[in-house]
Image (cartoon, rainbow, N blue to C red; front, side, top):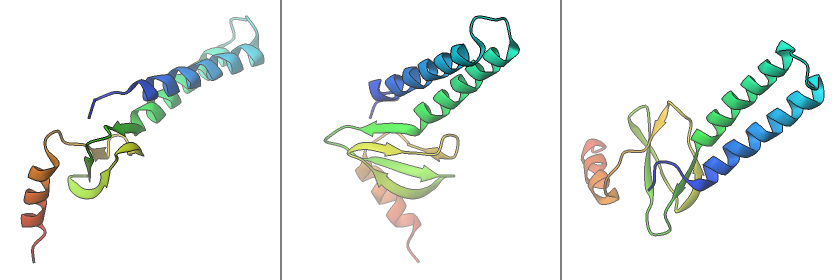
Length: 106
């Protein structure tokens, strides 16, 4: 699985463009701080949403860990994570399944 996909970059650009259009529509070309704040909020929102979108390749699945514990196998295809809380370790899914099965035994 790739770190960033073109889909998340597209979502980022679309949200920033909508934020810039809203800032322009609300404040025109004036040097108002409201336009800067609107654009800053759009950039922060776009970065959060684009970092939450992940795409697993068609032939693979992604192990999603929430705060270090197994949550779900994501993919193939589009799936969402919570940034800074969910992690996706790199490596083979088979290796993680062996480790997780040993850890979860009673």
